[in-house]
Length: 285
Image (cartoon, rainbow, N blue to C red; front, side, top):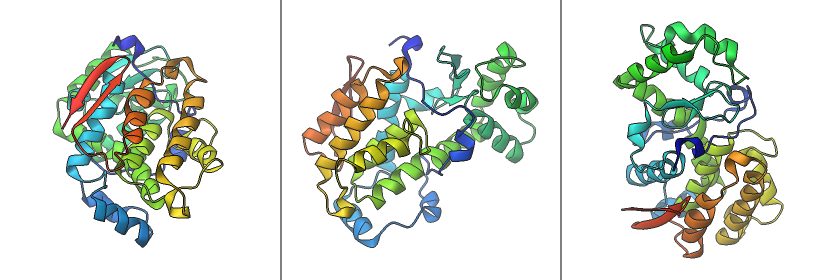
């Protein structure tokens, strides 16, 4: 897939840092200790079935699936150095989760990284990042910033910073909410993929808005509902939101991936998995 078609996350400009929930890392189990409490009944059923997306093996698979849609590659670890403006009005898109200079999460990442590692290649660009937040401007950034990002991405401390921010803002909130809703690993992944693209929050076009729309159509298992029925309602609600924006109008990451596994009854996301995104075939496990 052309980089120009690389999907961008739909976040309300400047709102991510305010609305951010909080998320857990590729193989980091320690972050679960600070997670939101999960109802005992939901937790027991998930762990008994082996349906925990936060397990190292399942989380690695989740990263690969998202990378197939975001980067047309299963090699998500090759994306730390990725940076470009894809012309979606969000400025630069960069890194393993598509942090954007116009939506607040790139600024949050660099601020947290600089607080932890003051002497880093990106620190000098913080004033410019603060200035362009909420816009698609490159003022004060440009090729110098792009080179600094790539330089930082060669360092283990910046890779760890990207992992941590991905987990704090996206993975953990998605997985914790899915567990609270009584969902297995597939449902947890469906939530995670949605929050990656649409961002956290409660607006109609955010993850919270999509979940609210689904809850109007079906009950999750935690409320006595059928898991497949609820997840289909969630995917239907997400598809509506995706088609509202040209950059997300291709819904193959739902139709030829998540929906296929759901229809097959693979609620625990057992491997091997086969899917297609934008017509390109992938396989893992």
